Image 1: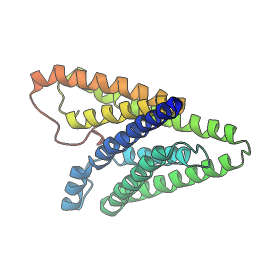
Image 2: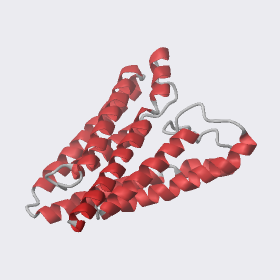
Image 3: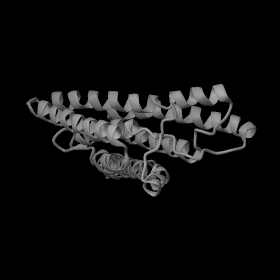
Image 4: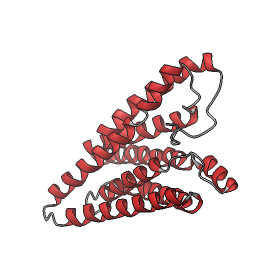
Length: 235
């Protein structure tokens, strides 16, 4: 009886962490809407880069595949969050194709097709692995590597903040959402005994703490928030 109650509480805590991660991730997925309202209004992608959305789509697709029951049957909340993320990124990419100039249209369409082809190859290749444990390991390593590289991308922004002593290009709410999402999935991964989830999200949590600390320190001197989402490339 006691073991049953303890297991129920454990499951509730795990699911709560996963649901919280889904909610905070949704905040990240909708954060570029301000940018795309501007793109639609001006009928131009201007100097905004579409590459972050291409890479995020690939990351969501890989992690979505990892969350499917055929790969890891106990990660439904990983499947849901990345399915939603993939839909948002695909929507953003389509807008880039519609409103970009001709070179941008060709580039984005080519990259989109390349991502879909690569994802199809990953799915096809992993299905050739008969052993379920080996299949989970293979896809898990890919998703883990993809997530770590995604969480490492803000290092450029962190470096920019330190160099300029300004948080202009590091929005507070975006940094906070990233931290909360990473922390939620860190707990979810720990409670689910899944290193492919808690390792990359642990790194994301640490980077989130660094970003929020820098924001707290440099916002006092800069006195301003960002006007565009972090995902936009200013290089």
